[in-house]
Image (cartoon, rainbow, N blue to C red):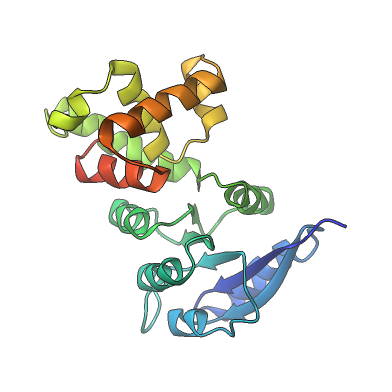
Length: 218
């Protein structure tokens, strides 16, 4: 029997928590472990629950979703956190990526996309909605048009293709999505990613994303 993905919903609006739970209840591979109203409740859940994924609101009374995510990731980096916000905000996205989020969705997300996001992050990939990706790319192109966000000395060591792959990785694209978008094989994408990590001295995707943000590549 397939092991179910254990999910915790964190939002200070009870009706929204109920709505998300109702979307997930019929999924055969997902189990809603708990539904809590604050970041404090989320980080104080019993260790015995061991959730796989937190669906995390951002703006809440007390500890917000960004701080709760930071705490969760420090305690257990393999736990996945998907931010669900009523506002697709560049500052929220940037802050979330810095603390290690695995995905970002608007609150009007549908059932199929919500389930897809959970299944995607459980495979070790990032998941960002089209609205989030569009906002990030819009800002990226604006920076380029205005002459901002130019590569640093380190990023100049990368080839043009490696820079393209780096930006797509930082925007949460999976290896398959990058391969499809650039019309290359997944194996080629993996090779580019390996070369990027070697050149920049990094060992994982989170470091690449952080580097891209700090150097205003996204």
